[in-house]
Length: 83
Image (cartoon, rainbow, N blue to C red; front, side, top):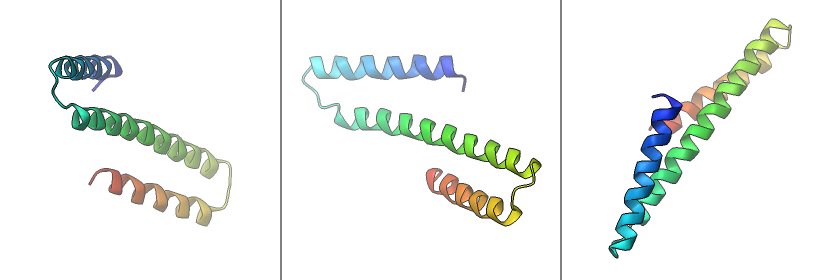
């Protein structure tokens, strides 16, 4: 999903939450879902950055074992995020 579409969906969700609050309904679960989605996007971008950095380090001759260990951590984190 493109960033623009994601932003539009986030705005729509926030408007729906505000409407629910105006109607006196509880929207805490929806708000938590939006926050969690934002955190997931941030963490995914951070992991992508680390993976790109590891590629660069590999091309520059850094220690292969260290790079492999960090890649394993990235894979573990990504699998945990996808659960």
